[in-house]
Length: 98
Image 1 (cartoon, rainbow, N blue to C red):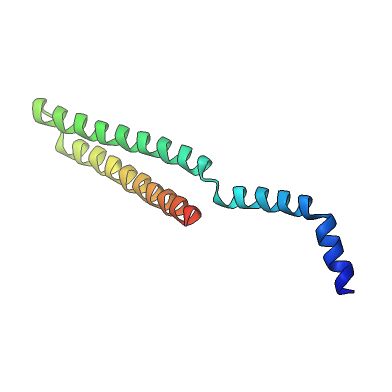
Image 2: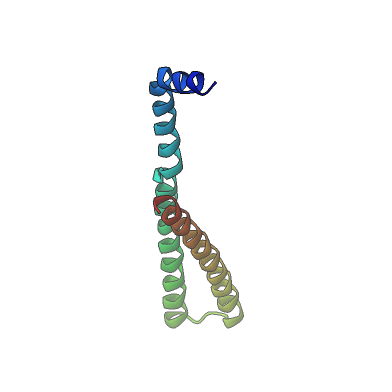
């Protein structure tokens, strides 16, 4: 019985090695997460830019402060959510590479 199993493995070694290679590549491949990471970083930069623009507008133009605060809170909330997503992606990439 043992000899049959060993012979089966030996005759199928190329298939087994190929499947193992595909499996390890799938497990450790981070390219999709890295692409998402870059997109999230761009989104975060855009939010920061909008926050800066809002602050500049508030400093230079008489704005209703309630409106300003509401808009800033919304942008802050978006930033927090995007940052959480970014942290999760970075963790997933680190985990896959480890």
